[in-house]
Image (cartoon, rainbow, N blue to C red; front, side, top):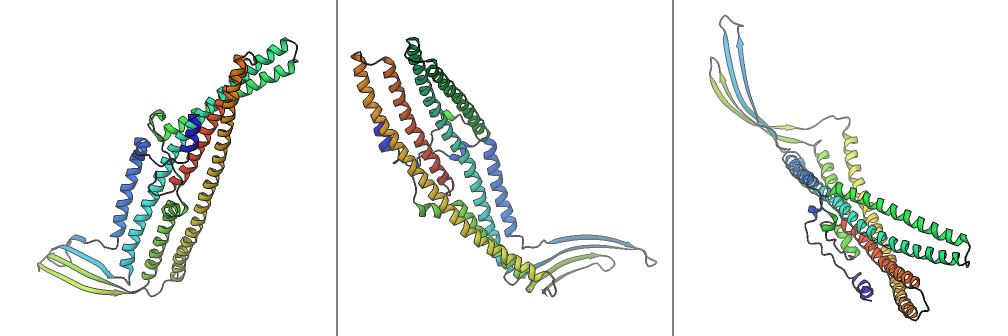
Length: 392
């Protein structure tokens, strides 16, 4: 009865209490890959943010000429730069694009990281589930063996023909083969876990998730945030594209040190104004960038719709699983009552030990069913939490 109270009260009121660093669930190699990717993203974003700043170029040249009667040597050292200082907003948009791209890459990496953590947690939950299913199957096999013994006695006493005994034997064999399949499935799950993690599944305390409301889920959805960051990127890229066809003002500066018969040093500084006059692809290029921006907005709306559907699907699945748990708990109460009555009848000599053992095994399968359905609820909640930023 304590089990019934625990399942009926505690199973739906659990909260997310996974305190350990979830990244540690992954193997050391996968952690290193994620950290390396994060560093690459930051460095690439820094490069992109300052890509509008041109190089300062240093040049050294040596010339030896005998065009005249006297051989002349000339050494020239120069340092020069041509730096755009106004690009019709292009510099500002380039910086903002780099920031938007940084946010986008961070979200993509986080999404990938949480996807791998989800795989580990999902595998751990499924290992727990398959262990429960194996335990339940063993109780079913025990009942099948009891049924064989009963029918064997009835067959030998002439109360049953051999077909009933044969069917009981076949049932046991079917259950035992199913048990072997479960053991094989468990082995596959352990292999998957080993691919992603260095941990022993027995050493991991599984989290317990509680259902979040839809507004919080939509607000923290990684997929929605990723699509929103794509809109920002596309918008700034579109503006950068347009600005590339508008006037640019550049600062030109140089320092020159000439060593020849004149031996002179001089500096130069000035401004240049440029504007593209003819580009046959201009209209199409701008239209492509505009369509990319439009597509990103459409994908954002579509992703919001998909995420809502995923949330609703998980909620409906959880509701159904709760009903299954309620049914299992009702059956568990019924078996409790029947078992108590059967034990009294057995003590009075009215029932056999087979009756007691069969009902006891059946009662255990009901308790295990409730635990299996509770694990399925956690798997459904895991799918929700894995889609939310920073939740696993």
